[in-house]
Image (cartoon, rainbow, N blue to C red; front, side, top):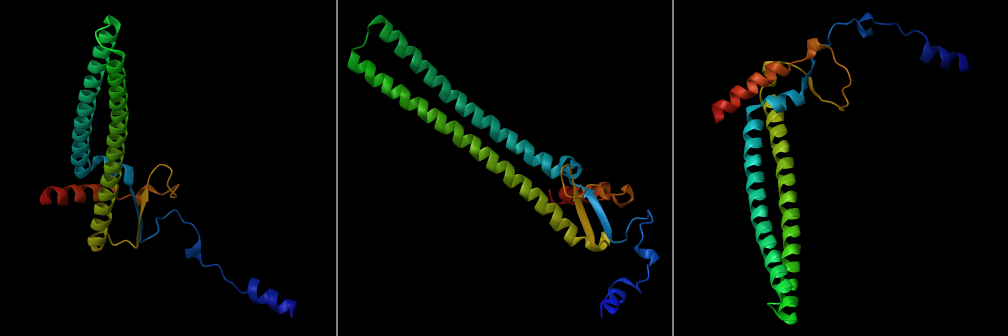
Length: 180
């Protein structure tokens, strides 16, 4: 029985030459360098510019409120050092400044969080656009699999003959310009 088991599972299997690595790219498989596509994609550049504008607006708002706080702090220091206010008024001013400082920190954190979330949404939208484009135009590419290659991705090596990055990028930019 052991002999039959051994012969059944180990013997009689012929090696097919098509199973061997030949250096020829496997048909039906390609890859796109996703980092290059995203950075050179016009949609990414437009959305990034919008995000930078929002960031500048947030910084301006934060700087404005920060300047108001600093002005109030200088006013408080000046009045206290010259003895122009009572202790009760100074305590109220100090309490107001502390509350203003906390609101400033809270605003900074909120603006920073909003910008990070918008950046994540932007990246997802771009990847969704690319994926949808590849699905809609799969007959143009005629591949069973198109992998996304980037630094740190699962795809560690690929033959450059399977690289369709520029072809996809050109088509994406043409489609985006037509929609725009």
